[in-house]
Amino acid sequence: MKRSTKTTTFPSAAVMNRVLRRLGRRYEIDRFVKRNGSSPFRILIGCVLSLRTKDEVSYPATDRLFARAATPREMLRLRTPTVSRLIYPVGFYRRKAEQIREISRRLIDEWDGSVPADLDALLTLPGVGRKTANLVVTLGFGKPGICVDTHVHRITNRLGWLDTRHPDETEQVLRRILPRRHWITINETLVRHGQRICKPISPICTNCPIFKDCPRKAVQRSR
Image (cartoon, rainbow, N blue to C red):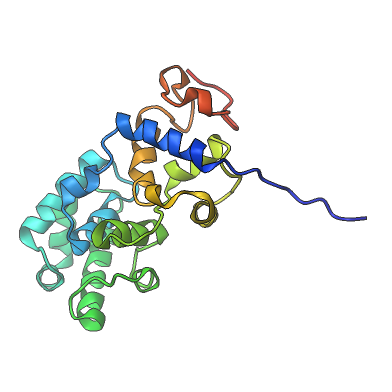
């Protein structure tokens, strides 16, 4: 008896183009770069600070920190308690302060103070996962990549584009099916949509610009 296997019907490029273009017209999709600039180092540290922290907290913290230290060498001159004080109240600020100084040290020791443009190299840095590494590669260097966080993972599954259990798996599927024109912008597009409309619990479906294209997979209650 053959074991049954789960099959997934992926959406067409036309459907994905329509959905992402419609959302792109509604939301500002380059907010991170406008706020942090295109410096790979600032994008890297800004993303570390943003993890598990709201934008309204992480953006001012990044500003305060980079007003004192804008390069890895300058950052390493700051003591860990000073970095902690500058980035407070971001989530896990003491741990992140240690990670920022260690990231700066590694960049100096291994890459002469520059941020590597290679995904695998970035993943060796403390506190850097695939989301952060992809954000640096795409926004800092303009290289192709797909940054998948909880919003991208949740919404693409809710749209029925894929059926995955983990953001890393979502990234790999999107690399196969998503038109390349959307690789860099999909993260900010779906983050904005997830923050405002497509919330984890009780999404505001009555005000959703892509309602007709969404089967609302696993949505039990909506507004």
